[in-house]
Length: 388
Image 1: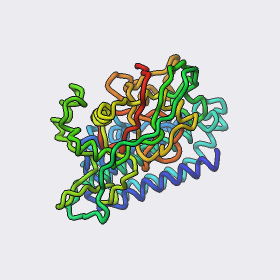
Image 2: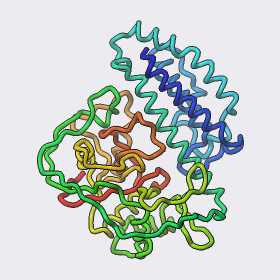
Image 3: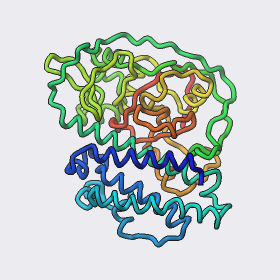
Image 4: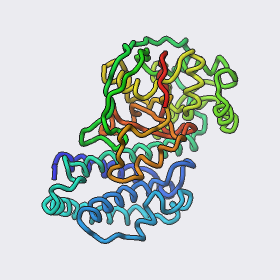
């Protein structure tokens, strides 16, 4: 067993437990957002995933049907999970028992099955590190929703956010061939196989759209100007009543501030805007007489060092989430295949809540176009256009 990888896994396990402990007991069972499971479920789920892959698949331990019902994504409905969750002390005892057994179970599996694909190049530890990190980010999203629900509007920013015209530096990418994807041990199945693409030339913004530029869009009546919204976008906007990014709030003087999992904060004018769904990102792109990048353009620009401020907000791409030519599901069908459904849009980059272990040029995030709670923003692009 790779000791350095196991140390990272232990750190992420500890971070998940600490995050759950940071809120009162009642809030650990509560759904703070309609799309997000209770915090206790995430803590139990990451334990279940370790027991499933290392305990069952590699070490041959018996399957636990009761635990699977509680913690599998296709078990209980999200709205029913809270009332059935064990308390934190019970989960902590389960974790302590499992962590005492994990190193020996994995070492035994490595000796018995040296050629197992789950063990090649430390795959199983890398897989668990990334999986747990993604759930940590989702837990931060839930805590941000909790803070938004508790916000009273009493916060007053000392330096109110002021709007500014959009001012972006576009970096050109010359038409030609480029390689995307990742064949390394960290890469997920949807990043494989790595392959070459021939792309027309395009120009991509060096930096994401800022808070100040997005406020100018709001002040220019961008949320109500029908020219900027697709039919689906208008339907979403009207139903949601959206008038600003998800985590923006106004004080009694009308000044904007942000709310994250720690509570209210001042919005920096030059920070990338966050809290947008894909419909808002596309509307802003039309307002700016630009477009969103195709994810292949984003990846090649990232690999060529054209992008700055990556990792401060997820960045919506124009294309739907799709399988690469020659795609093969691994280690299970459910990670990627169900989401090649034409209803999920790709995002690239990372947010400030992402762990470092998925922050690579090839990593592909994906969500339905109406999701605003995922700390996503927008980077602009100019012609030509790819389709998928």
